[in-house]
Length: 240
Ligand SMILES: Nc1ncnc2c1ncn2[C@@H]1O[C@H](COP(=O)(O)OP(=O)(O)OP(=O)(O)O)[C@@H](O)[C@H]1O
Image 1 (tube, rainbow, N blue to C red):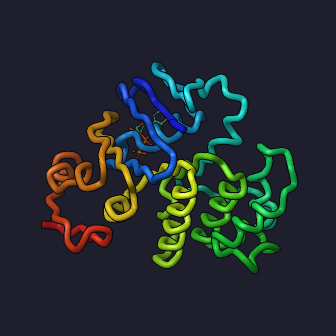
Image 2: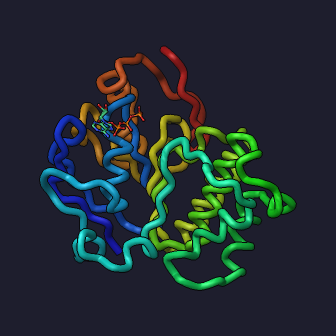
């Protein structure tokens, strides 16, 4: 049930980062530009080699795990669709690790990402946010145990952001692991169960959102004076 990283180091990108992530909740990875968030996510997904350290899934090294692609679904930062194919074909690619043509997960993913009616359209000709939803649907169609998504909310309008975070919360409650790189600290504060904060390649916090994203920590790591407004679960971040 655990995706675990031990002393991950990669020159200029990460320094001895260790964490043990659990299924059943949303973990957010936050930090300033260049802090190492995408690098950590790619390493957790088994897509980037480290100079030192190891990632294990339920105690087994990712490096030697044959079922990695089936168990870990990864969405890169600012993805683009480079192939001239239909929306449905892109979403169906999510089934490749399973080597099947199951339609129910494809339909469910299309519905979850509000893409009903888009199935026959050319994916390349969609807007940036629509393409982002198609690529998210591809990840969901693979029904991975872990969803690792780099800035999945960045291109989405507020309605689709709310819908996606609601969907990911339900996936987490249903027992999946969800790990999201987020720049929107209010989203992390309101929706994550746990927040990892990276600063210049070092993991400087691994705690619940209120502790990890305190105003003091934001000042220290991001160099910005802020204060949290509103109630728990509906906080907004204001410049102090
Ligand atoms: N392919 C690469 N080769 C070498 N260094 C890289 C590579 N990709 C990123 N870096 C460097 O590693 C550091 C961490 O980059 P990373 O993309 O992990 O940061 P990030 O926290 O995701 O940043 P952002 O918020 O800007 O997306 C940066 O200094 C970056 O310049």
